[in-house]
Image (cartoon, rainbow, N blue to C red; front, side, top):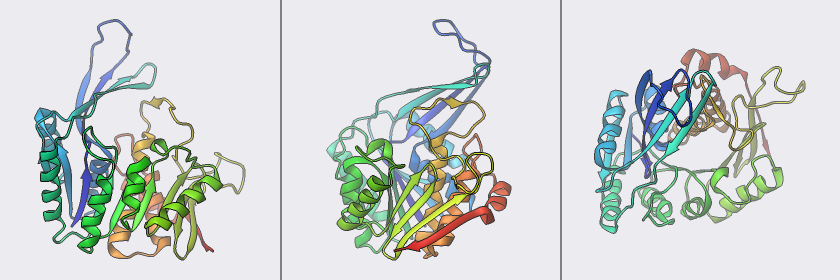
Length: 327
């Protein structure tokens, strides 16, 4: 059983309109709800590939109940710790005429000390029988930045490998407790540029020096894995995107703050799929080339609805080029 932990989930409310006029009353043609948060996205992707997964974390209020319902519809089991505050909502308005999506994000709920204590107890109970733990995403108000460190310690103490996807001080606290894999989030890590080889290598070295077993770095020109045995690089050769012979990972981020276009997967969806791709390999002991091929192909096969296109995945899998290890 794989346990994903999302401490700051959100109920995504999708509005689809033919045209959005600021300052006017706009008719909505379609409304859709979705359980959001990086750990929940990872859980859904793992379930699609047939893995036994439980989504845990914090959820409260009517939004929290809808998050549970939406995950149940997707076939994902949940074991959330209930909180008194309302889980946040994210409203996404799709303007079909402009082909743009505009998002409105509510602030995160405040977590009390008593709720934090119940979360720790619920989490430790889930470790019995777990094959891997995935700790993903931002932290709500009231939680200490050391929380990922504590959750990583509980898991490693129980012999369960941890995949940590975070940024900033939360990443460093977690990495210091020995996760099997750390994936830095450049959006939350000051001074970290994924496309600057020196800063990326330096961060990877720092995280491994304080305890991370390996580090995966996401860059525009591919995915890099830094391990004890050396460095690996994986990418899909996508014709027409770059000069001949220059690899690029299909769909990887380019510029922060780019507008989200209607009918295209978000950069976050591609990243979540990439993170999910490493989880079974860490849990089952795959080789790094196999992990990288699976993760990169999965990331590139995500649809606009953040679902994997399995036919596309199968076609892309042999197209992933893996180089390494480089000492």
